[in-house]
Amino acid sequence: MEEIRVDCYLFPGCPSEEALRRNIESALKTEKVKGIVNFHRIDEEKAVKLGLSGSPSVFIEGEEIEPAETKGFT
Image 1 (cartoon, one colour):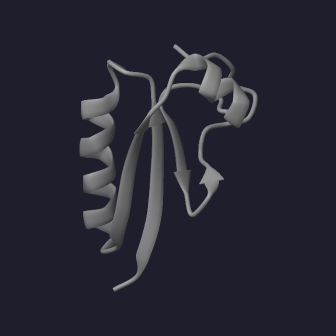
Image 2 (image 1 turned 90 degrees about the vertical axis):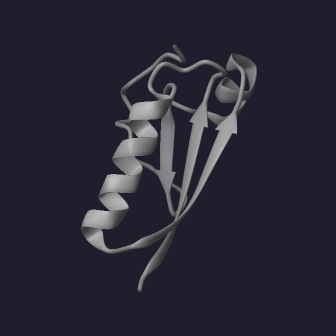
C-alpha cells in the first residue's frame, strides 16, 4: 500500500479541523493510501513566516493543495 505524508497547519480553535480530519480520513480510505497525518497548531506570525495561504493549510508530500492566490489566516 502506498504511503503519503500529509501536514496540516491550523490556528488554535480553527473551526474547520473536525471536517478536515474526516475528509482526510475519507480520502485516504477511498484512494486506499496509508497516510502519515500531522496537525500543527500555529499562530499568525508563524503562518506568515512559513508563507501559508490560510487556516487550514494542507500539504501533501510537501506541496500545498490550497490555491496560491488565497490569502489570509482566519
